[in-house]
Length: 437
Ligand code: GKR
Ligand code: MG
Image (tube, rainbow, N blue to C red; front, side, top):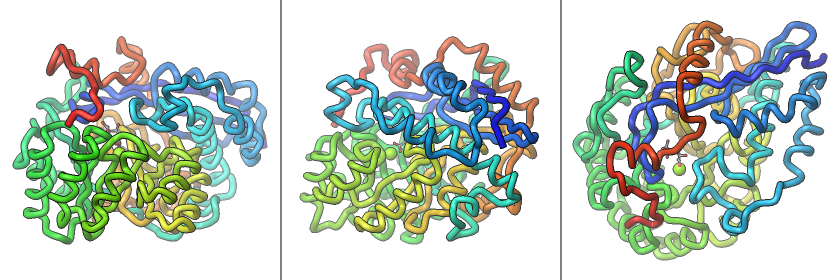
């Protein structure tokens, strides 16, 4: 079997004005859809980061992909991941995503690019062997994968522009009370059983109030996590950790409270008595970081993500390494459609050491943008079930794909820039300062 055609589709999907320490989301998020077709007529799909850079990295692989046997992935993996292009000192020093959004870290560019190809090849292999992807990679350990309610502070607005503007399902969310309302709505619709709040937006005391209000509303049956994406100093992180000691225990955690693994290690040392667990997708982005996280006890829970850890099989290795090193494992997300959701679901289904519900931005996207046939993926009690179908278990609606491409063509930007959005709409002098508090 050979790959006979390789197509890349750049799309834009409406996104609300969600806030984080990076700034504010633009009216559209960018994604790239990879389409591989084999000489015997099987099509495999995947979804990854959007915009010019990820597109160019994938396009550069065309000579290797065309004619490749989709079952033989090891050579491509080595070619893309065994050498790292020269990296600026400030990035190398951190080996992390502190100042960059996931999808932009030059250290894992090869892994991201490989992942997009691997996932589409696994879709082909599943369709060729009539097996779901999670069973192709060694077999599922669960039939359904739990996700968490991913709450964001946000300005009013539902995303999209002009005639394409979307309804604002959740309204403005800039207080503890609004946060509870958002959670109620999201949980009623999807049935999530764990809650994550994206913090680092409002002064820490307001965010402490939000977590307390969520605990009061939902009780201990709903574990809570908060992720300020490095917006706090070590001192503030320790203060918040102490204040939220009870709320963040019993299956919850404090995610990337401050910059760097060294900072996290100090936070954990000072919170030892409170036993607040620390999680990371910013300071821990590769296997070497996991070892340092264990040696220094900086991080107890690693956030995986097939999109930048190198695909589904690397996620399984990570799950094994986390088990060996006594780390828990959860999953990170960025804005995505159903194709990514299914890749995340298959990956998580085949990871024995996944110990927490996965993150997903899926509730922030709408039916109008979904490109999988049949519309939005359904959640049952906060979980996505592995479909009884080969491959990833979804097909692509080509009309919807075309609409996504038209939206992308009409946009002026080709890269995520949350700081620029913040300056445009909230504060003309806004800069990303870490730590801010
Ligand atoms: O969507 O603004 C966002 C998030 O802040 C996202 O970019 C992060 O990558 O969800 C992510 C996280 O957990 O850090
Ligand atoms: Mg995070």
